[in-house]
Length: 92
Image (cartoon, rainbow, N blue to C red):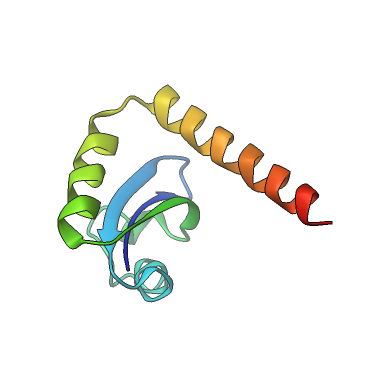
């Protein structure tokens, strides 16, 4: 599986990337071994991700998210959290 993800940095900024091992990649960012951008902005928190079958799909989505404005990203994160809560409620 391949993932496109958004991290919220300590300073409130967002970082978008892609990986094939989400847990390992977030850990690497928090150890200062991720991206140059996130190293001085640790700790980072995973706030959004999408799953893709191919690396190319994940990379294409990363580019699309990077072109979005901050408000668009915040709305996308908010909607995903709301949907997650709905899924949790429907399981109970």
